[in-house]
Image (tube, rainbow over all chains, first blue to last red):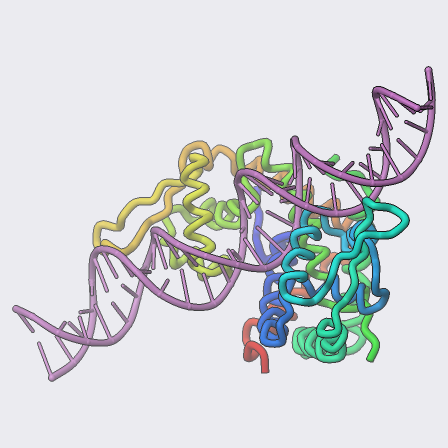
Length: 147
Length: 147
DNA sequence: TCCATTTACATAGCTTGCTATATTATATTG
DNA sequence: CAATATAATATAGCAAGCTATGTAAATGGA
């Protein structure tokens, strides 16, 4: 059997993702944001006070991964955890002033990373790339794990 | 400013890569292969006895990352490290019989993961997705880091 | 009402990525 | 030929992903 890395979707997308992550990390780290905090911040900027469970659902990562990330974000002064008054199991995640102040800057850096990546593509190609990836992701998320 | 995760290339590709990695990992782990070993094995199956430096160049990961992966692969009985006779600094990475025997099975699992991912796309769309990602990767690798 | 179950989150332990730095062997240069 | 520079790999330490399991609070059925 033949198998080439350049035509293996998994291989290529992994490489792609690492390049994007490296770039974004280099841009946001100087502003006190870690790479792993970024996706959580995006959702919290949209809606502050989400619970851990809600964030997990939005982020598509596992609960223990988020718990650890939140601990680092707390340490870095980006969020606080507050026990929900009505349900003692629930932690509401709230942004600090520092995190709120970083919003526009973070958007700008992420936008710049994305722009640099697709600089060689036409508008239509950029759109198609996102659409195709979106369709693959949906299908991976809805069809059985490894059949 | 507005920013939506569903249209952020970095966000989407990260999610995509994790889904692919989870699937492949679940398939190959039962056969004694770790996810991180997989890319290295693909290259060693093509050409056994590569040096660490050569592998690093092919894989696009950092040298310490590969060194750690090779240590685990050695532990798992997939490779051996042999000092090069001519140059005492060089380690030649050689596949074990066990690793050689896993080749076809590994190709089959990776092919299955890729096939499941693109099941909802036409042949032309699959080709286009790979082509577009390839172009973005090349451009990320050739243009300056974060300007 | 009480005990079992479920729910929300935390902890432990591993992998795989990174940067920075140490180590050791070869190459170069004065 | 010794001193220095460069090259190949190793080590240390951290981040962020995972699975498996622990803990504390809420719920629900006998």
